[in-house]
View (tube, helix red, strand yellow):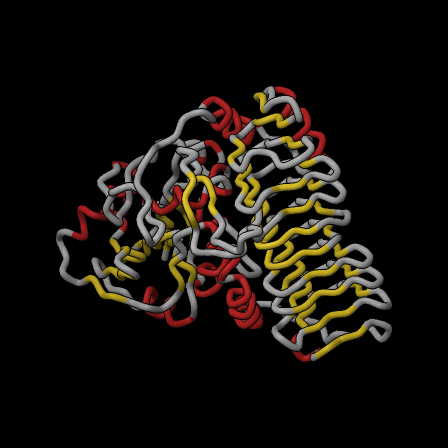
Length: 430
């Protein structure tokens, strides 16, 4: 069995995080959407449709030996019941969630037509009456859905991981462990004296080789993933996921931080989403609440059009390789693209395009070659080479950073007018 993730028009609502990754590679809870489906279904192989610029980095197609292919909407977060429904689909059967197609099983030949020839799932949906509605799983429609569902997803992922991983019984005699039966630690976890792990309101996950330093506090539901560090005195509130190979300090609440990013000093980060390879300078602080307590407004990424969210609390979304200088302050609802370098006093713009150099005087383009030199140095410190296909992906984003696709935004956060199927190609939204 092969899983092929597809993206409908809803993928646009997850930029800038999805400028450099497919939707199924977003982290929600402890693991990514792709990893959830992989653990539930145990497929022989996984592939996905690709849009520019992801064609450079994600190159796998359908395997030659595949039988049926399960097409899964990349925005659909599974639970056990959703996974069972998908597993039990017959050929040409489909599932619909909240009016959107979320899964369909197709034979391999028809799947090749979809994948290679751009026919699209809608072609096959017109030839079947067997489309079933489901309320299982969670279909995310907006950026903010990620941090809003994060507490629930952490709890779900703990139950899922119990079936595939072994956990070590907590044994840190000089730390304070509250409700230790709900603390799930991988091998080689270090928890220093004076640290507090509080699982009274939900489970806490400590990934392999993670480190909770002296005086740090983490409240569940929460996750500190593999090889990551909570520095001394760090305060992590519920609903927070610190991805693999990150260092964090200060005060953090309801945040998802993807891998290899650092917030290593004081400052507040709340109700926010941080990509990979980001670095937040000392005392960087995000606002997540307006002074008038009204819903936070954010810019639509591709157009810059500002619209009101339903949320009273919304911080910052930062694309990969974002950087802030010391004492940076970010307004509630700020969106930063890929390779944004912010070193201004006061509040920078709420819509910062990719490859921007934001100084007190002006916002200017960040020279591509200089950005790649910085990325190469940063990635080398983690033993990861800056590969040619990665550079090509970033070059595509750089070359198209002033383009976008306008469209309407409805009450449920759906942009554009396309039908819920598989588009052959997607215009760049960078």
